[in-house]
Each structure stands twice: as C-alpha cells, then as structure tokens.
Length: 364
Ligand code: ADP
Ligand code: MG
Image (cartoon, rainbow, N blue to C red; front, side):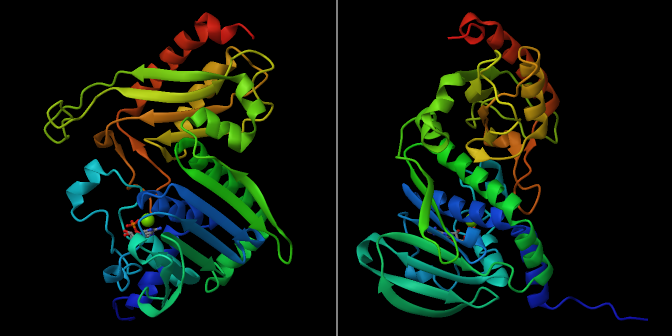
C-alpha cells in the first residue's frame, strides 16, 4: 500500500498559487489593489503583448520599507491583517499575503520600490520561486512601487497554453476590470497602456484624478455614454442581524444596517439602453465583484420598461463590513452578502419606485 506522507512545501506552494492567481485578470486585480492599499493616487498599468510578455503596475504609493524586503513576497506575510477577527472590519483590499508569493511561484517576478525619503534612488528586488529574496540592487526610481510580472505561468504549461489560446477573451476581461477600478476610484489617475510585440505603445484609457465617478465614466467609456445615464441612489433597509451565533451590528460598534446603492444606470426608455448586456459593473464598498443575483434583479426590473435593450449599470453597494464576506474563494471574486434574498426584494421595489418617477421615464 502507498504510504501517506505530507506534500513537500514547495509543491504545496505551487499548487496553492495556481488557485490564487488563476488568470491574467487575477494578476491585474491583485496588483492594482496593492497599489490602492498603498495609498497611491497615480496607477500606471502597462502590458507587453497583452500581458503574455509582461504586466507592470507602477504606483506612487508609500513604497516598501527596507525592513520588509525579506518578507514582502513570503506566503501569508501581510501588513494588513494580523488576527482572524480583523477580517470582520477589513478596510483594505488585501488581507492574506498570498498574491506576491503566488506570483513568485508562477512567473518571473521583481519589484522596484522607493520610499519618499530615498527618491530618486530606489531598490530593485528579485525573488526565488518560494518568495525568498534573491537579490537587490540600487536603481533610479521615484516614490512608489513598480511590480513586474514576466512570463506568467511559465512553469504551468497547460495554464500557459490556455492563456495564449484564450487571450482575446481574457484581454477583454482584463480591460473591463481595469475600467471598473478606474471608474469607481475617485481622485486617482489611472493609465492603461499596451505595447504589441515589436509594436508601439498605445494608451487604452486614462482617468484624470476626477472627483466624481461620472467624470471617470466619461474618461473610460467616452463622454457620450453619460447622456443616457441617470443617477442611482437607493437606500434599502435590512433586517437587523439576530440570534446568539450571529454578530450583532449595533450603533455602538459603528455598524449600520442600511444598504445604500449608489451609481448610474441607463434611463429606462427605448434608445437609452444598450443592444448587448455588457457594461454592467457592480461593487461592494468600491470592491469590484461579480454579483449575478443583483445583476439579475436590475435587469428584470429594467426589462419591464425597455424590453429590447439592456441597461448600462454602475452600482456601488455601500454596507457595513460585518454584512458581507470576501473570504469565500481564493481569488476573492465571490462575495457573500448577508440576507441577500431580502436585499434583492427591497432592491426591486426601490428600483421600480425610482423608474416610476418622472425624470427617469421622460426622454430628454
Ligand atoms: P496582501 O495584499 O494580502 O497583504 P500581497 O501578497 O498582495 O498580500 O502583498 C504583500 C505585502 O506587500 C502587502 O501587505 C504590502 O505590505 C506589500 N505591498 C505589496 N504591493 C505593494 C505596493 N504596490 N506598495 C507598497 N507595498 C506593497
Ligand atoms: Mg494584495
């Protein structure tokens, strides 16, 4: 009989890394979120050959302190969370210290970082597959961090082939998700560019550090998009949490029970929607996420007013951090909402009331 024995550490690391970084989209998402967590106001995302050659994310955030160089890419090393209970009040995008360590296992990975006091000198850090620091050198740099991912999935041949084969579809998802961060984050300048193999660099879109999501949408999708949009601002009441096993959200701990949904939506009249059900963006406290049930509720109500088209939807669900859980899947794409059934019912009622009001239904 075969002997049962533990999997060797390095193998475990590689297996798990492939679950955190599942595709190009997860790379981009993790790196942009790290830049946002570092307080960046400028985020520059550069692709070579649609990311197949390299993905670089440069920010002007805090930079990485020299005392963290050795640990920055080690698995489960994070500056954002230390105890399990912190998860309930999480304010940052990251919390598990897995993205950088996974990228070390799945690509050629390096970082250039510089803290304000050291500019214009920075440090280039290179890492082993395990996430251990391999080498550092002094380079010219401005305050902030640039993360460079080359040859993604070079050591997972099947995944690499899949990526190359599906690059067209994957690329449009990547641009979509970057558009979501660029639209929801106000006061931040995003720039996304791509350089084809041996081709010249093209800027795909950029935002200007606008103060409103409306201006961001105009930068990303074009000013014309705005003409069909009306503001969305719904407040839904949720049942207070109860029962001994559930955490009660009270006024004392700063918890609020209401859910607010803020954003923009196509006016529900013919000619103002879209022919295809694309450009529907959902966020939970500014975290982009797929919410199929919420999306379905929006589309159902919209359909009653404009059966031939789908709405552009940009909806940020603002709710207390106790009322959802992002730690559901390794890639953090799935979010569990507290009392979703009730929330959806209230959402539909509130949307109907909104669409019934004059300014929404009379074409301009
Ligand atoms: P997490 O975001 O869950 O903490 P990561 O593996 O994404 O885990 O990052 C590990 C740590 O590296 C972070 O906690 C943070 O301290 C540091 N870090 C990563 N990216 C940046 C960045 N762009 N600027 C400054 N620090 C960063
Ligand atoms: Mg992170």
